Figure 1 (cartoon, rainbow, N blue to C red):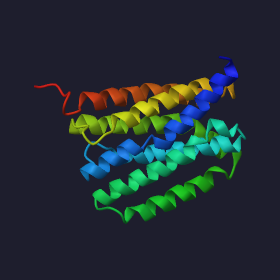
Figure 2 (cartoon, rainbow, N blue to C red):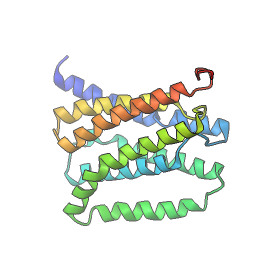
Figure 3 (tube, rainbow, N blue to C red):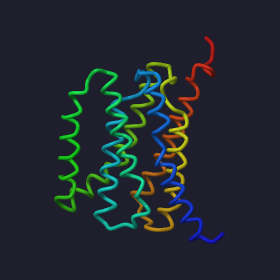
Figure 4 (spheres, one colour):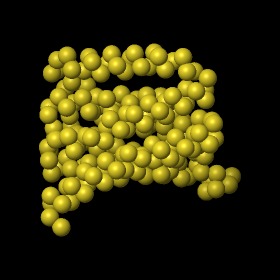
Amino acid sequence: MDRDSVLHFANFSTLFACMVLKFPQILVLMRARSTAGVSVNGLLLELVGFIVFISYQIYYDYPPPTYLEYPILIAQDVILLLLILHYNGNMKQSIIYAAVFVGGWKLLNIEKWVIDLAMSLCTLISASSKLAQLRCLWATKDSSRVSTLTWALATYTCLARIFTTVVTTGDTQVLIRFVAMTILNLWVMATVMYYKPSTKKKD
């Protein structure tokens, strides 16, 4: 299989995985009607990271197949956030979050230095989202409402994006981000599996 074929497979498999990536987590929350073990702060930071990343890719006119999944991920994260706010009885906060995210998205494209600075912080922001989820799991010691499949798919998509970035743009900042996200996604996935009720160690 030549490099172009592998690149196409990586792009389309990533897009397909991202189309359903958050669905397992959404379904778990809808069944449980509870958000224990799911970090709201982690989700908000993830949304910020996604918005910065796609804005950067569009600003520099990178090939669309390298970031097409991000509008889908943002939409799924918004649905997930609304569910969490609903089950926590905080739906009024959704208006504030919407205003902040839309305003921030507009601000990113005002000047080149703004988007460059935001992208330089993107890896830190995205890493913080994973660490927030880890802290939430460590605090609750319960991952029954966190989907292992969602984190497994997230790990695969980051691995695929390491390859597509090397082959297409070679952007060091983007590559560092995906390597860091792969490691952290694996860490979260392992933690979720550890704290599942059926596999949790007995004291």
